[in-house]
Amino acid sequence: MPEVAPDAGPDWPGMLASACTGVGVTSAFQPIVDTARGTVVGYEALARFEGYPERSPEAWFAAARRHGCAEQLEVVALRSALGARASLPPNAFLTVNVSPDLLATDSVRALWRGQGHLGGLIIELTEQTPIESYVALEPDLHRLRAAGALIAVDDAGAGYAGLRHLLALRPALIKLDRALVQDVDRDEARRALVEMIGTFASRIDAWLLAEGVERVEELDTLADLGVPLVQGYCLARPAPPWAGIDADIALRLASRRRRQQKRMIRHVVEAAPTVVSVAEASVAFTADPRLGSVVLVDQHRRPVAVLESDRSNLGVMSPGLRVNLDTAIGDALTRAMTRERGDRFEPLLATDNAGRFAGLVRLERMIEVVAAGD
Figure 1 (tube, rainbow, N blue to C red):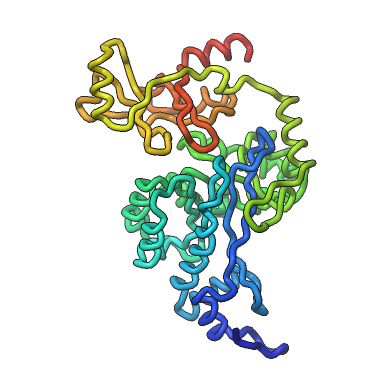
Figure 2 (figure 1 turned 180 degrees about the vertical axis):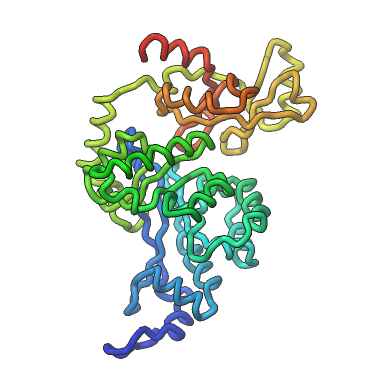
């Protein structure tokens, strides 16, 4: 590894040449926490540069762009993060950061192919470079989604560009900018913006994640606003795989849930038949003419679509609206009613924390619970 004189600036050419071969490049993993239960449901992989005089990842990736080796460094960082994927806890997801302009490069595409099925992986598009064309991104995003990955957008609420990302990309995970999270407990305008973005997230069936939570007052406010996912130093710092969170914070969130207990989707979920192919669905409909619908699932039992007996033979299927088992019934009902008129009263697909299909939820049943006073 190149030596740098104490009074000199970083020897970027030498350090980058070394790091791009993998020397000193490691990953830390910061827990992502479910505010409803106080449990870890995912981790964000963060690049680390050990043994160099410069440790800041932002400085490293900026220097790599200046010196024309952004692709090589990003691939090395991704390999480090994905190397731990095999040992990821079964009910957790992993998020990795990718520059949008590098998605179409051969080395990044080869990296995804080498991972096989991408279920449980969330690919977060960073803002290292501006997105010149959303249309140009579509083929790669489509391939990633088809392979089981989800797409996340960083720094929501950070400005006009961030709002354009949300509208154009329709991500599955929206990360709130730290500028909105900081002092959210002391600023009504910030709280209003968080609520607004939360409403938008529910309209496009996306999760909302607040990062950079550093104080318990911020955490309490975000939980009260219904933000489902949080991460930050208040809960846990980046660490080797797979760290938990501060026990007192976990208890704080869990006890808050008990104090504000609501009826959850798990209380009204109903069993439903599943199939792994359209052909299998046709057999099921023929065997039982009274069977109105079945749920098509993938090899990991994640729901793909709802197939109805009168339309599946025509190749018509509905992707359905997915809700977690621990979603409050009132919140799920609100999301359901934002759908297109023709789909508004279709059953919801209930999933567990790993995204596996758990059953169907009829709107009639949810309305009964709400009408009875939750």
